[in-house]
Image (cartoon, rainbow, N blue to C red; front, side):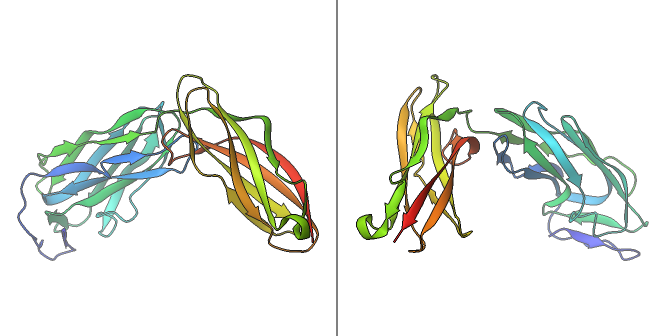
Length: 275
């Protein structure tokens, strides 16, 4: 654990300290344009008498954009310190801070974060997360020799698909529970549209009754070959025997790896259920 020296207390050293380094954590982040943002940190380890730092993390701006940079929850944030720079721009984030007080410093062998960067994927591909223009300063105002360990951000392959032809529909537009039971099968016609690469697809049916109840049905994830068209289906069970009209949004989701999806086109339709 990194040991912290506060105010006039002497620094406490924990474990062997040799070979200071800065590293991106996690080493690899995976995301997709339009999906949730991801957070990476730059961590310091194996450092002695650290009192200040200046670190820039950079990446390909056609793949990532900076949402925010923060020092909240970092090793410096728990000590008396002054923030000198905390900013992000096109393709980079930078933080620089110094500790306050002559006997305040950071020493230890375990990793601890100096800054957190929240990133949004805006394009497909991969990019290094590169630590650069970085300086670590010790209590004698000397630069601390260290090693940089960079990270990687990447997306699944791009994928394209659309709801086509009838797009989406129910098996029964008028479902009689007494005659056919309380299950309606919902269908979606999906095609891979690039005609050059495969796509993983699924369709989420959001069903809202005229009484305000909301339920969902989701098709299995299906792999479409280049140019392939397939009919996906999901079973929906009526939550009530009361006569209701149900309004449905069929939302196509498309991905390149079967795990991360973005929304494609959608189709709305309705059906009725009677006892």
